Length: 339
Image 1: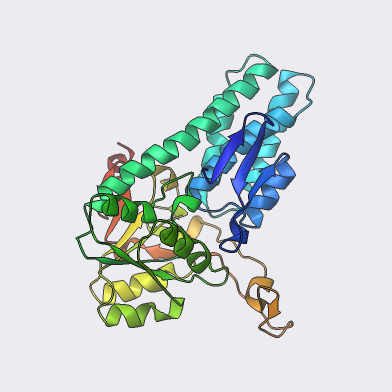
Image 2: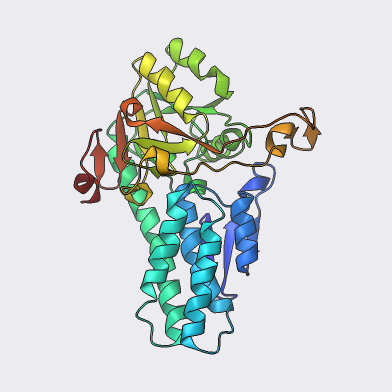
């Protein structure tokens, strides 16, 4: 199934619980805004494009779950639910983009029924478009890969970070579809190990050769000539920087030092043209993520912990950004990307 979808029989959201992978593949349901917000905060659903769909479906869920007596009350309740959903992940722009897009879609509703119909139709459109855009993005990105390349990636930018297909991994899948022999090096992506738990699992399911390394090995493998290209996803792209999983900036510096192309794969919805790096709040996560590995304590409980979820990679470290509208080489014009 898709990473996230709508159950038309129960009128709720269904998704793959990514926190259980690779040990267990489980579909969970979100039938309240509270359960959806918990799923987003705990990373049961994650990845910028998937969060865009989650935001859209969340607005529809709020409309379907409301017992509002009038249209005005319903619109107000849905708007409040949207703000609650957006607050769960402040750095990733797609979440707020999905929420705002569906809220705009219900502005012309004349009654409660139309609010529900319009919101769900728009949320489904976001999900369907995500798959189509990732396919287009993958086609553009595949042209940048040569037969025999080994690509390093960080975190998870595959089908589980999207509704389906993927961004960074979508490029790799598209290249493989074209018959190119592409291998992957996946960084584990501490502290929550999305690279080892999810990316490695996805690639092995698709029978794409993958080698797992620790995050701190990236310099070693690039210096040894084991990496031809680096492709990662993005959670927000501002005028001057790319926000992605913590550790991305480090990989970009090493790639630049060794003359290795460093690509970002992301849909246009991930671009935030109104802001710069210094404007963006980087989400800080719980200290326990560094103090425990699973259930095992690996640090003193009273140690001071700094645990940012993302870092910012300056545009001068980025070779190109791969989108559904083509490949763009910084510095690029805003209107070029939007076309």
